[in-house]
Length: 109
Length: 121
Image 1 (cartoon, chains in turn purple, green):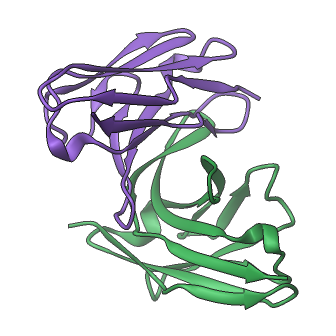
Image 2 (cartoon, rainbow over the protein chains, first blue to last red):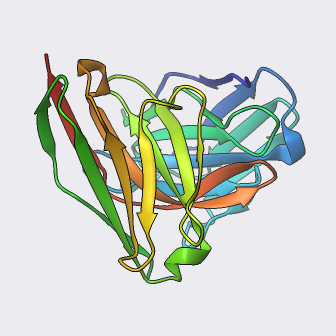
């Protein structure tokens, strides 16, 4: 099974700053099949990135995904107040079961 | 607009049975996989399994095989998640998702708001 390790566990930043969230896989991912999701309490989670770098429908271009192999990054170029949430990465499509990372909490400083 | 509307919060006792539901709209329900994802208190997300409503082909993640049953009624555009005997460790929020298949796996492009399930011992 692929284990995804997200870092940092918590990231404290201010609106307007740049955020970088990391996701490391225990083995190289098949075809870079990696997604990022945002979770907020009481709301439906949202898909932000799939295929490591493709933005989902309606996601602002301040969000970008990058990486390949075992190391992936979600970057938010300039934080808006609504961006503070928990973000999860997910591996899918390989020979092992789909798995999620443990999450990064992005909190307002 | 794709919408997944889940049934309301449940409070149960250990040993009880339970079915929660997810009604889909805004797309052709039979033609897309539906997935269920668990979020336990203080833990991360876990993919439980998926179903293809057109033929009810259900696939389960190893940790959930035999623990739950996923089904779908294409005439009602509704998917279900069933437990025959709940445990306290089933306490969690359960999300219904629309799942897109890539390779041998799925990612989730639309989500419901979640159904909280609380099981007391």
